[in-house]
Image (cartoon, rainbow, N blue to C red; front, side):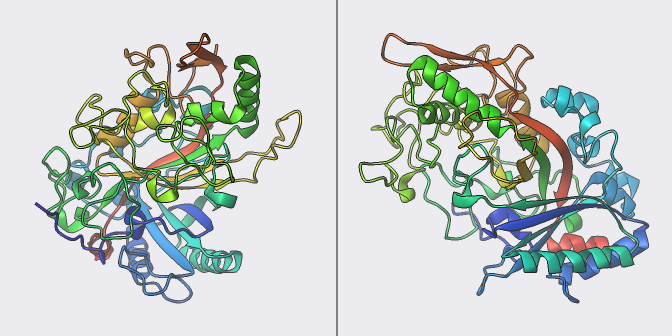
Length: 467
């Protein structure tokens, strides 16, 4: 049965599409009082006086030069005057927030990534009530919209607690050099224009609360939350992740020399894709063809799996990981058709994030640390924080899973590796087998995090009403 079309006018737009605008700024804030906060919400929904309206998923006739989206924390909902009885119905993960010590430790946010070191959402930072995100086509548009927003926040007595600007790198890459934004779930009912993928459409209920949305388990994540507030809402785990690009480049080059591998092949094995986005499952030997074009056309780079299936009996059986290591980043976090701790094609996330900080210069022969922080900032969006985002972070990223190719390891890129260093296994069909990369550092450090609810526009209008 086909899923009903979604209410695009009501859903915040950053869930269903990437804006593909090159600049962004995120501002965390705290309300002064409920009355002024509700008045501000009403103004933000419709825009005006230099502010864009909150951006919905409604199709564009012309792409806007700026977009605006809003997420609210559990503390923010309380500050808006939501009754205690309603606040108590929200899931425990959302109420705790990612900075709660036991929860943070389970997610791998320990040591340098512990909440005590965070600039946002941590034990030493002020409690944030929400997050406003502007994306823009150019610096003048970003500066103008940001200034108008800051002026309006100040008029309402809202305090800005934190901000971070982000900018796309050439080729839509992240600081580790990989092309980004390839493997987003295609959400049923959201319409055309999504990249072709061998994976089935993701049920809308895996990401949206309420309405007629059904998740992959046959239920709805709304629970007993009020429909007038939470229908068409989604949850977002907002993360500020510093990336040690110099250490990454050093490791792939040193490992390449040790194991007679091209450093680009080492990088591809760690990710499961070449840095141009071509998956190892389709092109195990080279990222580009003889004339320098990607070895797999862009339209087909999602048409793969790790084993044959009833629908695709001709797929290469890579159970041993000879093409794509079993522990590679994309295979751990999206095992595609494999039934790993649940049903296939489940626990998926929509990631809307951009790099921050300047690009690292890999031409430095010593690959020295230049002392500049750079990383990734943005949302991981889902319908259930605990069963989707936290499960992936807690189990698939950081647990020592007792399976061939995974035992004794964590996710090579995101894992909170032990002080002695992590390890990563590469299988080969030659005498080097198995190649074990050791002393993997913790390349990614959490600098801040919030759990937000991104209500639909009707839900925000409900919140804006006087209590």
